[in-house]
Image (cartoon, rainbow, N blue to C red; front, side, top):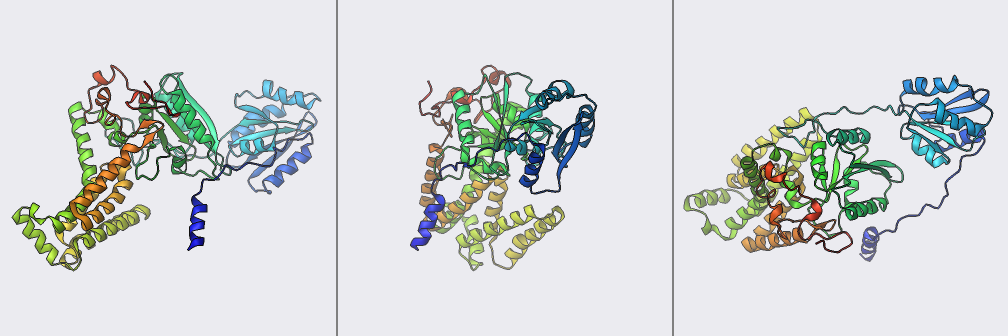
Length: 512
């Protein structure tokens, strides 16, 4: 037991950032040695391509990774002009000549270490090496296959652009540039991950974003110590505020470039990740979970109605099963007589307790959802049909589950899909409120609801209260929370995230 506790403490103890002991390996003057070292570095990988050429009698080589480059660009824009030029005898001058006179591209960099060489050729560059030169030139000729721009599958809107992010980070950057035609849009590239070297891009407006928030985000990203970054969720724990355990995230995620443009115009910062068709948004507030781009395309009265609908759906999704169990178990007198007779008859005909029925239904529903999500699409339809028959008709006719219980669970499940980004916390809270209502009734649900509310109110996102502008209250910011004001009002004084009430800078001082 003590050994198990010791292992848990070791697992969750804060780990110091690992220091790289080895020094960068410098490129030498010997082309033969350099090529041999590169072959050993990549362990003679079959996709490592080394073209050995002559530059006016001087040995040289062009190094690249197959299928990461455009071969036509390599042949006609690199090899052909280099081989047709007359070079001198000085290797260093030859590199400068290639850079300044032979190749007509801005995406060219002089490198001096093998670590830089590895990073560049694995990013779709080719590297030109010349005998006698202790440096090389990297030329950008990326040509790897990528998915074309299409409508995002999760962030679907009725009105507006049908474009969604793709896996190539540079394509995503160009989509933001096309929608925000201003030189104030800052795009800063860096990499994360010791093994993957995943390229990330920080996007913000120079005149809108708070400099202290930008600086703090860069610090958190630079302090990330992880081997690989394969999804957006890898970075979220590192850039969230350390607010303890909570089912809610203070980092937003979206697949839509227009949503990102709207957020950064309010002073927020977006993080694009290479290989991930979505963007992270910070700071992110709880009220933003209930906002969609369609809200700003519809009339204000209808947008306000749908926003109230989303708030109601969220509370129904987490509270309805628990309230149903609590009232049926402890406070039956709160039901009308006719409804109470129906519920009592259904409960009496089933062998399990009401709380047990509700937990089993929710558990089966989550299994059905997960299987339908992971299986191929044609089989997913079959799973949904079979599951509907098993849970809906057969279970009720067999007397295993009551119809009112199934109705409450189904209503809560449907409401949870109204806010897809809150599905994960809704699913967990449904189970928690069901157990609290089954054991402690209305009092248990009230205490748990207060605990969840306190948890939400205690969270911050880069010094900004997670529940702002609801609490602390800011009446000027209320125009886009419960009620969506018209565009003439919203455009009159554009909101900035750093001006939210109760905001304090990442250093801890409260803004005036």
